[in-house]
Amino acid sequence: EAGVAQSPRYKIIEKRQSVAFWCNPISGHATLYWYQQILGQGPKLLIQFQNNGVVDDSQLPKDRFSAERLKGVDSTLKIQPAKLEDSAVYLCASSLVRLEVYSYNEQFFGPGTRLTVL
Amino acid sequence: GDSVTQMEGPVTLSEEAFLTINCTYTATGYPSLFWYVQYPGEGLQLLLKATKADDKGSNKGFEATYRKETTSFHLEKGSVQVSDSAVYFCATADRGSTLGRLYFGRGTQLTVWP
Image (cartoon, rainbow over all chains, first blue to last red):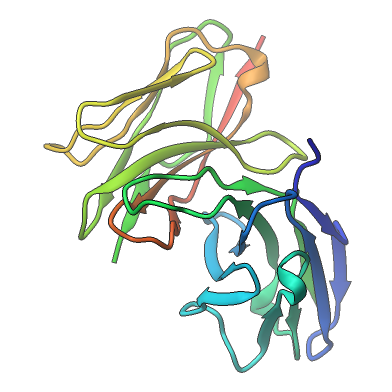
């Protein structure tokens, strides 16, 4: 079974430029997550989709970050314009839909995109 | 909100040494607890989990017990190998939420020397 795919793996841009990251989740996984992992810190959730709808974007800096998941499969995360503090690894994860409140569906992570903003 | 505090690294051990990585959490609800591992150049992988008090999660020789009274979930392994060198993350998720959001600690870098 193919895992979560992300591209590009590395990206270097200058501040104020725009950048986009792509994620293809595991087939059949309706839930998709984008996390930001700053060096020396744990991943922090930016946005969560269920199918093509947003269920949690409370931590997304909406003035510069946007994300979409057209057709409920692939997703794109965009930063426009980038700041120095956006340098991080951007992780995409996917899971099956959580059917019961007290159940847990494992999140499977992609390899991440390492962004450096100069 | 929920948060996780992990033992700071890096941790350096010789092969076959005993490993403990401490993890404590704060949560408003009754969380599920996890350890994730990130090997060099790879994505995060679930190592083990526990969903209720006194549960013991185990995998690949690693163990962690859900201690509600001390709000802890310490990771242990009796005899580490060079191949265990990785970054280990403790995480929580609110069992009462349908969102499944994970809250991660800072991670602990483990290096095992032969």
